[in-house]
Image (cartoon, rainbow, N blue to C red; front, side, top):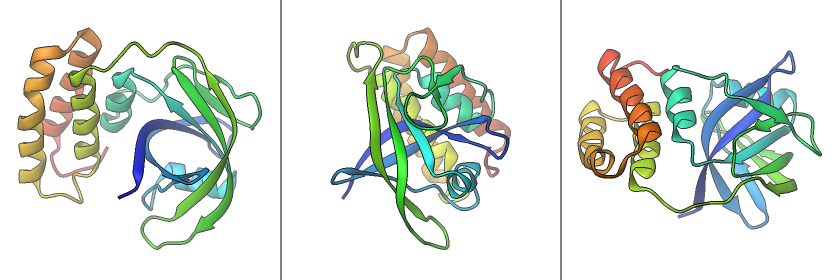
Length: 189
């Protein structure tokens, strides 16, 4: 199995505006692989302009906000070495340039080299509620691919982690995910 790092990817749309989306990035040797599902804005943006920033954050509201459609206008700042932006409040980020594309009808893979890496804030440790929110966001983002029973079971398994260990940010993000799951269980956001 590949090593996958959950991140927030920022690409540029056709008007050079930032598009913020959560994605699992695959490490392949020295390369980072971005594999968005077709159709998606991230995929179209990478086809148009082969650059992205991979933002590593412990702010789980970004993951939940993007998946639920609650919020996509997270503050960004310009990147240093590629055309584009990164999350303003990330702990670290990589600036990526696409060097090759592996075509696929459902999920093409954009192979990227890291052009620049920067640290912005200290990592202060793990929190099980943050893990639970990210896992629930992944489940919710795949509601057209997974049986609803699997999503329900996943939420039921993750809920105690939020109940036991969440702070205010994690509780808010979890609430967004719960509401989105209840509002439209079969439609992606």
